[in-house]
Length: 335
Image: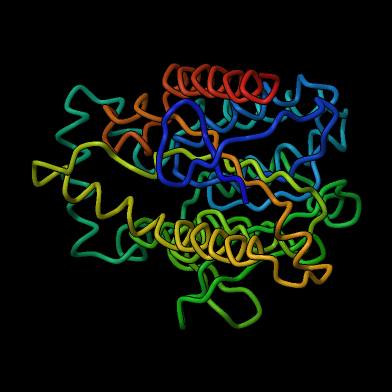
């Protein structure tokens, strides 16, 4: 399994052989609140490549919002429709208020934000938000036709949520994708009440798979899996302050399952390289190449709290960064 990303190197990088520009890939879209606008930019640039097609999409949280926008837009108008819907999603996010938006908009925004985040340690979402206001749900309901997505999606969709009862990963696939399933994938337990579906309650999918790689390996056909990340797998320097320690703990809680999947797949490929008799599954595993598109150092200076920053200018800044990183990935493939 070739696992690579450009330009930063790590122990996961395995190099990449030259490939034809006409290729089908699967997408794994990481979640990360407003930082999902980085993924908007990546997808916007990839959609400009007419020779690049998509097979499966595994996505979590804000990555799941991007996956639904891509799918809905594609159904409405092909590649250009997908680009327009992604833009509509994030422009709408930037225009509408969220539970945190008032904090950023006020003169004492940073201080108010810290107070509100601190309150989540002592009060449940039901106590802080008794009316169950969820701007993300309203946005998704206004933009996405889940009946069409379930019945006509050109992509195999896998939307991740975490089952509260036992912490297991739940993947909502095409046939059972719904507004509630999408909102379950985005449900941060500090801010929103858990989402109940068929008698089970769910939280944000990032705790169990951010994103989940397994369905793209075993239930899709594309040999290249492009993982669009909104935070780097590795950080060059250890956290030095109390805030940095807290932020790194949060990052790790949302990335350890993803890293474990990468290591498991790499171990399987290393074993297959030792001339074991190959089954059909073994041959597929041997061919799969996992590649990374990530912001790298570019987002290191941003606090974890910027994941709640939905100002339009900030979202567009992340979009532009995503387009740059996607271009670098395309250049590496052509190289």
